[in-house]
Length: 440
Image (cartoon, rainbow, N blue to C red; front, side):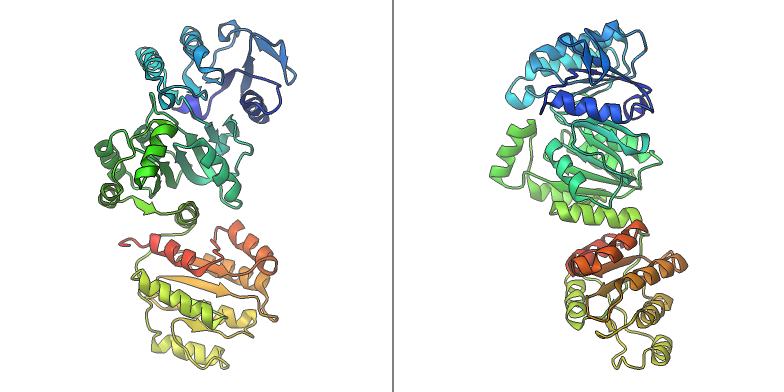
């Protein structure tokens, strides 16, 4: 699939300057990365689009074309695909909808037969397109291009990708794929590709229905990288909605849950949890059970301990050596226990002593650090201390829970720029650290 994800040349069939159109959106996105590759526009009704000469047909282009993107009405798509075959393109993305999801299965089957006969990989139809931030390629009509990172995101829904990119402010992606109706390339094909993709550490998936559940399980079991999945179509009404959306058969959710567990896939319930878990797995090392909690707010420490108990996470007692270290450093703190409350007037030095003491204890395998905006709290200094100590103890994951808004925003930015996840609600931090546990 290298010709799709890192093409040397791209042709857009359906390029446009018309406001609020898919053709304009893709044209602009392709031009943003045009310094990396050659971009060609195809539209028989235009001579120029966004300052670029427009060709009537893809076969009029003299250069070789690696990737063709088709964004024209469904009734013209088959003819465009045949032109791509004649041009000997190396990959095709069909953005256009109006196929299986609208009952037009015959046309979709004919297109599939054409590309398979000619051995041209096809993504779509009925999709948003693909984005490869690592190669400065946005072959989609997504309104923004995310930053480069190590999460590959696969989605049957294109609109969901737009929302996820916008939500994932500090999260970077290696690849983003809207695979739509899976006429040719299917979800398992992308899994096999990302399994060996050096830029991808975590694979995140939004799925409505699996074409071949058994095949998915077999492929997922053979992938050492974490796979995080959210399943839509869990209720009768949701299943019917999925069928009309991408023509997918959604299937029974209880069967999915069991299958995902057997395959080692991490199943999540919400989009927020999908992003939280993916971020944790991409940025932090895996760990065994045994978590320490450091907080300057007793209430949030208690809530976090409750959530750990709820999810079966062990909070080891502090050892004598840890307590004696803390006795020297934290004289104002009466109760040296886990959770460790450094109390509301804690300055950065007290945080540093508490965090290092916890990290030094062998059976504490990771930390959740909570910081609430008391009048004397220095969040920015706390964040810098955490970043420094994380470098000193790289094998132990750290999740932060700097809870607040404007008062913690610059500290959170510093943490996440250094790949330390922050969550504004303790349950999110607890769920995320649970996902890192090798036997979780």
